[in-house]
Length: 81
Image (cartoon, rainbow, N blue to C red):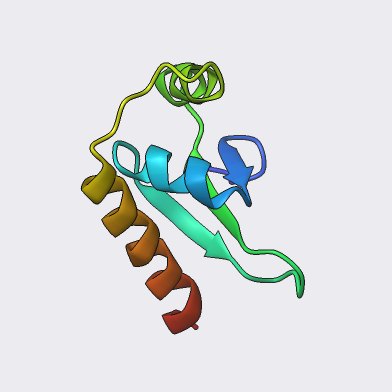
């Protein structure tokens, strides 16, 4: 298994995580912090490019697809142990 520290991307931004998870699998949902939940993805050049496109507002997502993905992530946050 890959070392998650060196080969992962971690974010607590729900909108970024929802957007990324439409195209990249979530490896782990880290709830070890009492204040934040982190979504962990395997890092790749494609992921890094997608993150840059997200921050430049270059990604278009159908609103219902995005809303459903956010709901899905919230369900995972509150249901996974």
